[in-house]
Structure formats: structure tokens, C-alpha cells
Image 1 (cartoon, rainbow, N blue to C red):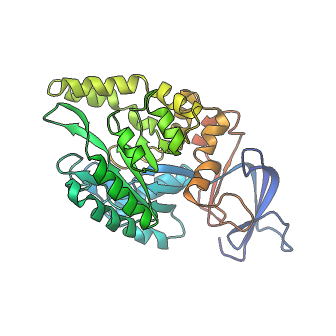
Image 2: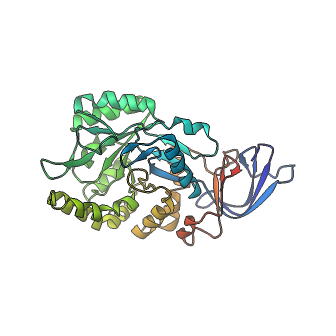
Length: 362
């Protein structure tokens, strides 16, 4: 859609949890609630949300590492078709800056490349280093990213045969302080219990997965304002992963199974304690793209109120990431549905129209 074209959106515009409008216009690719002088070139009717956010997504990555541009483009287009128009790319070895020049692809907030302990993560994904180098690598990735850095907080220790923390507390404190000096926030992959307290007291901003939260650490997260991105569609794969490794690492497999079994209680207890919960799928490793609607449904299944689950991928997520929603003058990134998603979040699985930078792209 060219800048001269005007789009009229009618129906119920869900600009916030309590803010609903009857119509908006897209003029020059931007949202306005003031009727323009020019007649609209097109009119779209329906229930409208800001473009969905996947707060843990890996465009440019597959199970084996970085992918080429064609594969990354397909991933981005799959997300766009699902209504996901803003991704926090939570770690990737792939350079996807070229996507920023494409008006037809979702916006990406990058966390640079994962930073992991030597031989303690998925091959070809991360910088694999030792604690003495952590602060320097964090500072470098903070400068390369878009305001985020991604650590691998725990992973299987093959000698112990179970999940174990990767970093000593002093190294974490130095590294997180370095990121904050660079103006970046820090998040960490964490499945298990043991790494969480040290990460929080070292100043971490967010934890991915967070399956290891307990009654002991939930109050700590709430006190320090640490957010979580539970990636429940990814945690659903734990039983299969555990079964595949049970013969060699029975303690690890049993641990994964326990974390999976209490996943919904963990998320609901975190939400009830006042911890900010955001929607993320972990798409792009071994998980398919385009699953953000399924993740929102999982948050509801875990016990979040529907409005809170919607906020986790719309209003709240955009505010947390510093990106505008359906505000006056904002880029017109929005999704139109046939029915009210507040009545049934499964509506998110079938966008009627997707508007990106003011253009109807799906």
C-alpha cells in the first residue's frame, strides 16, 4: 500500500485492556483516530489488536545453527501470517539486520548471540566461553544487539548427569553490570531451580522458560521485578526429550519430567505473585514458527486471565519492549479478527487481515 492510500478500520479496536475504539484510519502508514479529509481507499471490518509479539523467537536459526537468507525469510513470513509483527529474537548466530530494510517483514529486537559455558549448550548456537570472559562477551553482544543480551543460565552437566547452573555469582554480577552500563537488559535461559537466585540477585532482567521457579524464588522475582517468558509450547516437548535421554541420563530425564508436570502451576503461581509474564514460543530452534496463538492459549490454560494472556502478546509486551501499540501516530502494525479474542483466545489462530507498516500483507 502506497503512502498516499488511506485505510479505514471499523469494528472494535482493542487499543488497551480498557481502551476500545469503534474505528481508526491508516494514513501514510500510521495510526490516526481523526477522520482524514480524503476518502479511504479500502475499509476493513473486525476485531483489532496491535500486531502480536513473540518475546522469545529465533528468526535465522534452526536446529543446527544459523540458516541462510531464504530460510530466514520463510520463517519471518510464517510469523507474519500468524499475526506476529514484533519479535524479541532471544539469541541467534545469524545476522538478520537485512530484515530491517524489508517493509513487508516483522520487526525484530535482537539479543545478539547466546553466551554459554564451554560445551554446555546446543552446538553452533552460542559463544562458548569460561567465566573470566563473560563480562567482555556480554559487553560485545550488548553493543551488537538491540538492547538485550542472552545468557545460558543452566544446561545439562554430563558429569553430574543433571541440569546445573553455568556461572558463578561474581561473574554474573560483573557481566550484568556491564550490560546495564551499555544500556542493555539481560535475560537467561533457565530450566532448573539452582541458577535462579544467583541470577536475580546479580541483577538479571528476565528469565526464559523459568520452569524451576519455586515458592522460595517466586517472591525474589517479584521483589526484584524480574519478568518471565515461560515458552509453554516449548516446555510441552520435555516428555519426549526426557524419554530420549533417560537411558544415559536418568536423573536429568526425571528432572525434566517433574518440571513439565508442574509447568502450569509454576506459571500461575508466578502471575499470582505479581511477576510479569510475557508470551514467547522459542520458535526457530527445533520448534516450528507461527505458534504465538498457541502460546497465548497455553497461558490461559495455565490459569492467566484472558486479558492478561492477551496483554502478554500485545499491550503489555509492547510496553515492556519499548514499542508502540495502537496509539496516535504509531506505525500501523495490527491484526484484524472475525470475533472478539477476549471471549476466546483461539480466535488468534485465524487472522482475518494483517496490516504491517500500513499495508495489508495478509
